[in-house]
Image 1 (cartoon, rainbow, N blue to C red):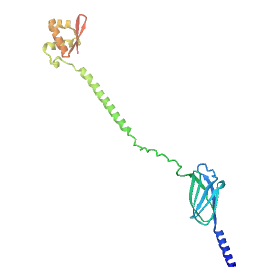
Image 2 (image 1 turned 180 degrees about the horizontal axis):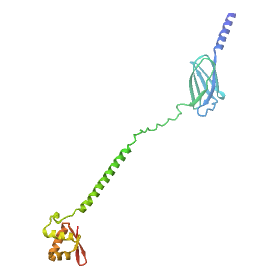
Image 3 (image 1 turned 180 degrees about the vertical axis):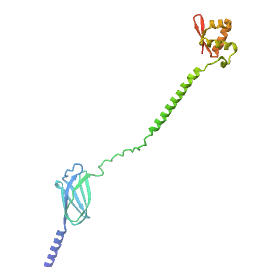
Image 4 (image 1 turned 135 degrees about the vertical axis):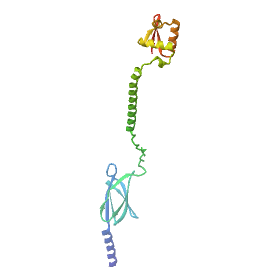
Length: 218
């Protein structure tokens, strides 16, 4: 009888000395406020459960691996811990996965390579320089064309028309039709026909002035 009693006492002593405590507080994730009244469980095949009054919990367990689960309304935490001696393990409760709003996916904008604007600038500059060069060449050639004298032979005119052009040229490029007829001795009808022919060829221009006409060499 005494031997059996000693055996029971020995078992109780071994169990008591091998037990360790895991304890801590329960917090809300966004404000880190203590959550009072959270339900805390510790599992290792069996389940121990308690209500964390004032946000504190405590369990006596044997050394080993445990899963701690805590719930408070929409907040939730699950942690795996290894206990070898007394330890403090605080729990932070997050919104449960069902309550977490899905974060929208924003469209990814591909970054395009920057357009080589310097190439456009080079091309535009090239066109401008080419245009200026052409204008300069034309402006240099124009005085040369103006300085060239046009002889009646270059018009490939009949003799009487060439004679009229030569006379107008000697008179400084303009003369009245009356003076022209007087110097050449042509009749008024023939003079009118010659002037009309030269106008048609684009060689002279007749301008009405008073009762007469002034003939200009173009």
